[in-house]
Length: 118
Image (cartoon, rainbow, N blue to C red; front, side):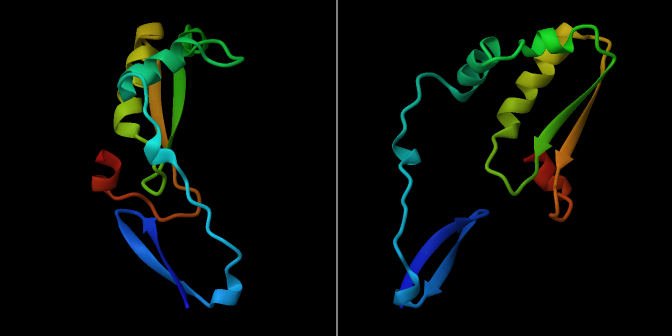
């Protein structure tokens, strides 16, 4: 019997399959990546030089209503790092705009208050 622990939410799930049903295991090397700068610095740098797009500030300028779509608690997105930066930059470019945050739950259950804060 093939067994593998798979990260899931804040825990791990044990997967058990018959050996004949396993063609192989792909393992990521993302934990070996060494970044240059803090998360905040990387986000600021990416927003300063977007790929094939105007900057966030250019897109926000003069707008009265802005919707920011955010991943829900099921995705490993550091929203607690990215959201303050996005909101600051939007408000600097469009101080009078009404900004709404849409949490994209898809077919998942709604996020709890604690999950939204996290």
